[in-house]
Length: 80
Image (cartoon, rainbow, N blue to C red; front, side, top):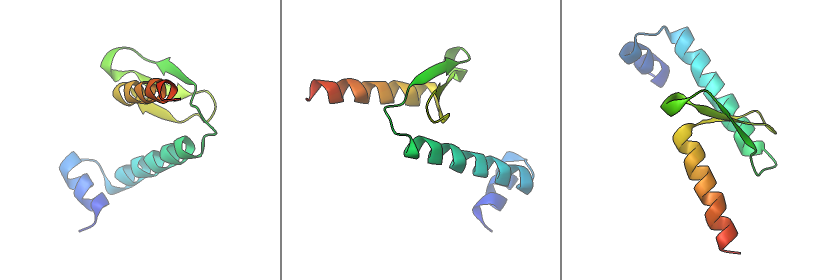
C-alpha cells in the first residue's frame, strides 16, 4: 500500500482527490522555496483558519507557519 492509498483510506477521499491535493501541496512548497524572499505575506481569511499568501511567489502558509516565519525574520534582524 502506498501513501496515497493509505491517505485515501483514512480520509475517505478518493485516490485521485488525494493525489490532486498532494500535487497542490508540492507546487505550493516549490513556490515558497524558490521565492527570492523575503516573503511579503498578505492575510487571507480570519481566525485560526486564516492563510497568508506571498505577494511575490503566490505561495501560501497557515497562520501558525506565518507566525514562526515572522519570528525568524525578527531574530535574524536582531543578530546582525
